[in-house]
Image (cartoon, rainbow, N blue to C red; front, side, top):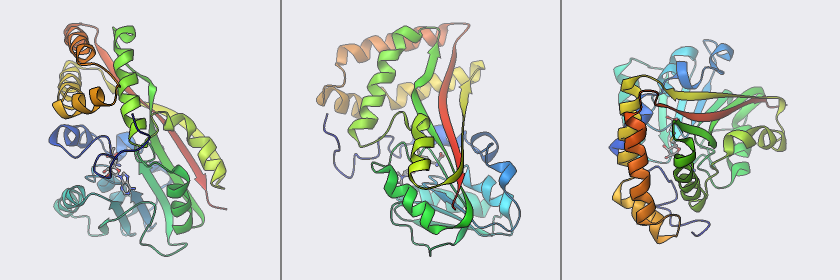
Length: 273
Ligand SMILES: C[S@@+](CC[C@H](N)C(=O)[O-])C[C@H]1O[C@@H](n2cnc3c(N)ncnc32)[C@H](O)[C@@H]1O
């Protein structure tokens, strides 16, 4: 597996309907719960790597009438975010296509900068954090929530499914990503020069039969998609036989009455001195 592949493949998750369905379950209430108590009307807020804006719209509401800006490198996601903000009447929200390592904003512009499952994918963490620091006002708040693949699980069957999680981690790494970023955030925030740094952790969980059906379908459509299997086998991450075994394990997990699944996240907050 090369350290980094082409531009096209450098974002592991892609922009297909399967992954969009997962992002559609997110909201500011569930995925930015640690940030919401710090938000006030009138603040200027940046959501960098905002994707289709399912978290953004709640953040825009929380700072209304303050300016909300969302930015993502993928035009199709920004189009979805713009449509969602317009449908929700969020007149304070503006969305931009752009790179989080080259933000199109002036220095000292924002009161708050937030990102969710973005540093997991950006190869050079310091490049993203230094840009976020640049556009924050002194005293401004930076907050991030990122994946911890090794603490995410499917139960029962943790031992059997761990290999598949490890393969997912290798795919992320192969595209320059960081499968354990949620654990590493605090150290990165300190290195970036943030003050008052505090880390926390939480789960996105799948606990009802509808949630289990959703997660099963998502794993099937995303992880077992022919393109993912192709890349994983091409770079020696896994064999087709392993994928077939993991598919069987997944079927067994779905049929367990006690089936439970989570994605684990590390969170971090700090202020610009
Ligand atoms: C997993 S999605 C998360 C989207 C949203 N934050 C959420 O949690 O629902 C990661 C997003 O980061 C974006 N992204 C990754 N690297 C980027 C970069 N260098 N500049 C801008 N966006 C980037 C991707 O296009 C994708 O939309």
